[in-house]
Image 1: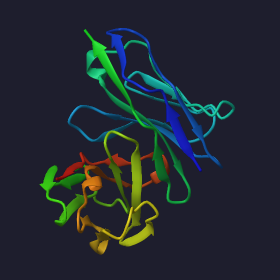
Image 2: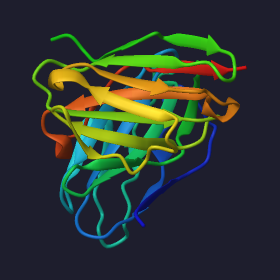
Image 3: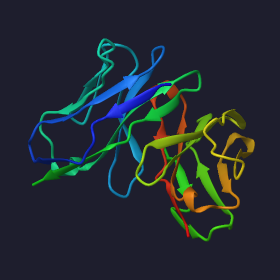
Image 4: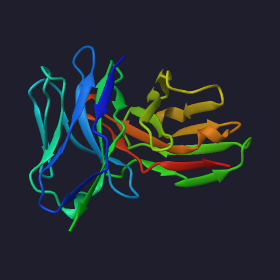
Length: 112
Length: 113
């Protein structure tokens, strides 16, 4: 079946460091790919999305490119801030109802 | 616009009791989803409504779980009787165009003791 694998955390970085969180997927067909973020005490928020191969999703300085050849959707940010500390979930949607399958989540801590 | 609203935010119940969770989606969103996250593991799909109809309930763990969506508006998820393994965070999400992503509520943290 379809699945999402993302790097285990926690990831701890200093402010202004470069961030990469790896995500790979297994899917039949052509799913949409997403990154969701959960800040402490809050629900999940859609961070960015890509709906077809080679699309680049971007938001708040974060980027991810839908790579069909490597079945990857890695999240990157050039300079993280303390306020980026959160749990990041990679996800794909499938089928007509677009049921979403989530990775296990990667917790990011950013130190001042 | 108002977001997806869930309540209660927390619930602590004893094993064998009944709990009902409620979700108010964004107005106009036909698609409503329930997910849960148990013990910090993956967020797992429970079911999907399109308006008042159950489109996909393949993720419902057993018949102790009952979901309804009255009139295609708010939805409830009832657990009866609750078991210890039902503890976790239950998320509701809604969407107008699912392939572009969902809007999630803040979740209900359910603890069964």
